[in-house]
Image 1 (cartoon, rainbow, N blue to C red):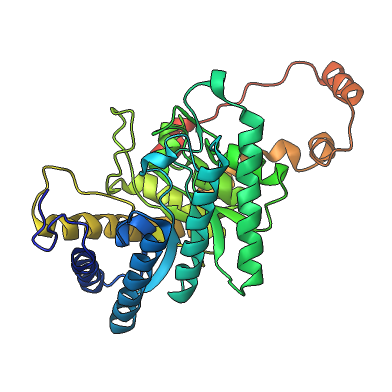
Image 2: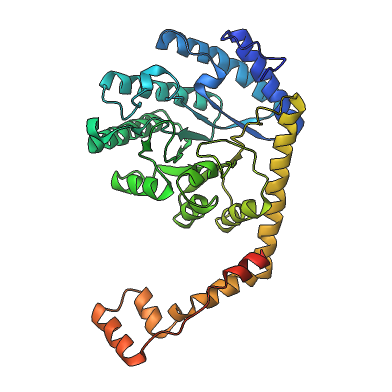
Length: 368
């Protein structure tokens, strides 16, 4: 795919042209925030020092564009998966030298994010996993990942930085198995290593479906446990088994997402980030606008529908009725943890076989 502003070179001049074009897109769309990977905005050089120098130069250019347009930085993140040095992971690499390189990239991203006023930092472990368990010390690798996160927390606090840390779960690709498999796995990891006060989750629905869940599952689950921090708003093709990063156009699915966000009172300091690509056949510059506008309109419509659903209360009353057996008497005592296995046995002996109750899934779907 050719873009008139991109000569596909790794020069700083080309990097700045790409940034200029991006901010033109942001301004014309009227969006308030943007995001980036370090190696997306500044080319990687032969040494860490040279890469950091290029990143510093690019950060100055981005800061100028931010001041000119008023567009702010939602989050920055580090690309720890493209360079061959990370073929066996970054934080979970069996080589301490490689782990140190990844940690050094995190430090630099924290510094640049702070300079640009970024409100969050995302950690996506694209290669934090394994291809074969035969050559893997799984526990040691996960311990090392937690160690890097603790170093990042320490550096942030010691330097007066305030971004919300976010982990983005994904089950596989490029590794066969990634340690941050899905929301529930990642939340368990954070609890295990005492990191829940410092991290929330950045959920990408395309990753959720790759994990075998519905589009909205990880967003709702994270929200219910107070761990939803931001959303990479995209979707995938259900007929393909990889991460296609398509613009989300399904209003029903977007309504379930926006409902969770409404219920928790918003996403700040996180947001809805369109981690999306136009299809390879969509080669016109205007297709970039059409994709973003379509997705923005989908979520705007979904927000209105989600609010209406909560205002009319039909769904809430139906769900409340479905679980009403736990509202008083035996069920309430059970829910509060005040009964024993013996008490459950006595209750069944006294009341016999439970009545069958319809889940009425089709009715719920029709109402939506």
